[in-house]
Image 1 (cartoon, helix red, strand yellow):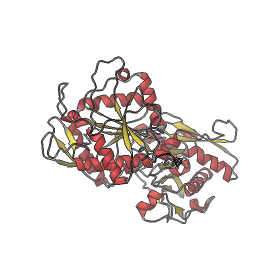
Image 2 (cartoon, rainbow, N blue to C red):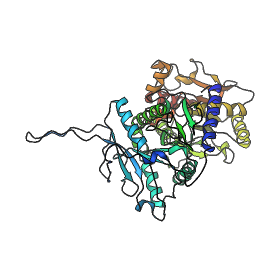
Image 3 (cartoon, one colour):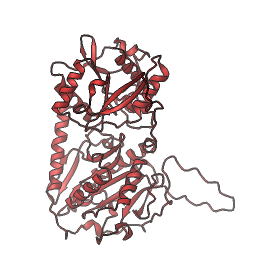
Image 4 (cartoon, rainbow, N blue to C red):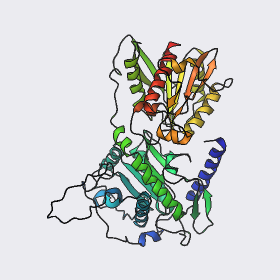
Length: 505
């Protein structure tokens, strides 16, 4: 994302969040959307009732004597309500709405040409198996109670196993937003709920959404950049949260809500179709991700072991945890260098980074180094160390942050593209041309390109090597839909060349 686009995004975020923060609080606030009953008799979901949307269910042969019946549409979304059992220890009369999910699912089916359905469930009956219900849908306007520890743990496991939790704040109420953020911190104390940039796939998976219309009370509509917050598991947005009402079933143009902050109905429907498309595209990746590949030499101790340090930072530093171990295994199997590799997480402000010949760094979100970390990294690089950096999904947010931070570390040097005849491209494999992932090929308009590595060069040495197009997503070899990078096989070949060149120079 260019600097001007980032500034526009920041301004739009401030406008959107200021609208939410400005909403009046009140326990006696009445939500007019809550008084609308479902159009059809609501379906309840018991554990085991749902059907996986991917892959398609096989047809069941019928005996000639059986009357053919239209099969039930696959259950895709579970709409969470609360029962007395699921609210143990509370006296809260929880309320939710059904109007938005009905319109959201119907509209998305019409656009995607599908027949998915939603079912109603609650935390006490749900099986927490994403193969039965891949998406949980959740909305409300009151402050949430604290979930019990068992629900917290089961929700976390559901999301780690590949499920997606889609949450929006009915009428953008701050009471709900604050309490939901609190519960997310309990579910994922080790992960951040944060806004995504406007070039995130959530804003282009079906419709290209560059702006949205938002309304507070009966005020005039404001045009802002699309805004969603997510919790990432790997490179997948596993929790998708809109603190502004995704008013799929409510037309705020003709029916504004006093005390509400709502997106326009058309914009909300388009966003809803994008969310479903994104979830379906990332379903297989989510299911595979938690089955981590472990490099067989990772824990071996030998005198010929070469230990690499992986930099820990606050921008999703380990979003492709299977990538580097898989690359190290490939190096072990495809080169004559009889060295066992091992990675160790390191904080450059505190760890002894000078004991590592190579530091590896990856990320997908904004991050920053402390002044101490910058100074120690510069000293490490000046003493002959090498820093290899990968933008794990070709994220504009990480790219902007890394370029900012490397300018702070090397004020006297710039990142420069490596020429196509540089020996790094032919060090082990011939990688002077590289195939791209489907998403990168679509964005760049070609399937094959010369690799686009950049580096800091000093007296013929490369202390910093950076790939803006993702390498580690290809190293993982997982079914990923939104990888802006190199195809798996060529990503591995490039990775072998880069690391072997670094340890040999």
